[in-house]
Length: 300
Length: 280
Image (cartoon, rainbow over all chains, first blue to last red; front, side, top):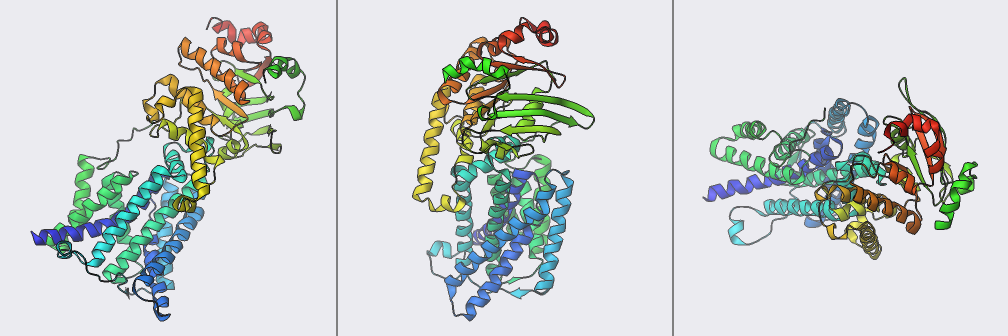
């Protein structure tokens, strides 16, 4: 039983990280029907920026939590700038092009950003300091997870709640929902759709960067390639939950995380990806539009 | 402004002066590949007027609206606006959101509400271009943000009151009956603070009672809200009842314009349009 709970907690941690990245995929898809393949790279860049900043801050004698917060904040700002620029130069000029063109552009940007970091930094794995401090907390939970896990779960949950509130209650959130439902009409009621799309990329990038910082600190090492696998997994999670659907992305991510953890724990860690993608295949056969996705009527 | 509307038909027979025109479209032409959908159509709307644009199906009326509201970029011609406040400008090729911000709002022939948003939210989204809260503001919720939000909600309720939809404020737009959806579309367009409202077949699919209510609503918008109206409509009774002037299009060309009386008696119009559809 305890083993099961430990696996569950590690599954939820993975799931929480996938969720942070998957939200960016699903939001962008919801609004412009584009699979932003470069999204994983934003996550990776977020982790790199946090690593660099934390190094600098350590030299200047900052400590513990203050480094985590400052490095996280700067990583988030940096990633937001990358997300914004990405949309502006790689996707906006192709807004009215056939759907395949921005997709190719996205793959191109993904390769470009990977190799850019490879050249600018290093191909090797870099050690990432454990920024999340150890602290004592309640015994029954402490039995199955450490403080980094708890911090990841809480941060991810808070980010998700924040996103929900933003989309549901704020002016920009309403504009995002309107744009998602009918872009032409949104323009006609005076919504600046271009700004809304930029904002969607910015929000998605912020979430991805938060994920990047947490993962770096949790796993303890990063390299230029971490964005690829995380991106594929998060994309899987988004499809699993029904792409374009925000609660779906979170649910899909948690299902995926737990599947991987159980597969790794009860069978072998060599098989975790097999099970993860196996679940995806199964869902796509049984519910092609994803767990929470609605079937889209094909317009002829 | 009821006095204005009575005298308007006379004024409009001569070419109106620029300072007394809201929308002035000159020789608008729209080609789709080799097809000329609109051929040098000119039209103007003066303050306080209800102007109707009629014509058989496929005459290019909706295309005309699309050119004016920035969905299409016209091939040729000029779309000039002279807002009551603010400077006159040529708006060919402006994006729709800019056109709306300048002060022209429209509705669609087939209803295009945000189906999965509530009735109130649908109207509130219309206020988007008149408010400024940034994402930072939304997080910090300063006094300005809160005041703006309160105002947006007040104005939205006010508009729902005017179109008689207050009781449905928290329903999803898709659950409203058809006639109510039409009125909601008008309320949403009005929320953008327009000086000119472009209505594309507002009475389509409505029963006679609903049409009559709509007829009154449109006149009330003109009289009480001081919003001028340009409408496309097939319901001749509604058009003849409320319009100050009528333009008639056929096959992309303008074939007549004038007061409802002129149009009713114009042989060209009768041949093109009313002849085959006289008792509609």
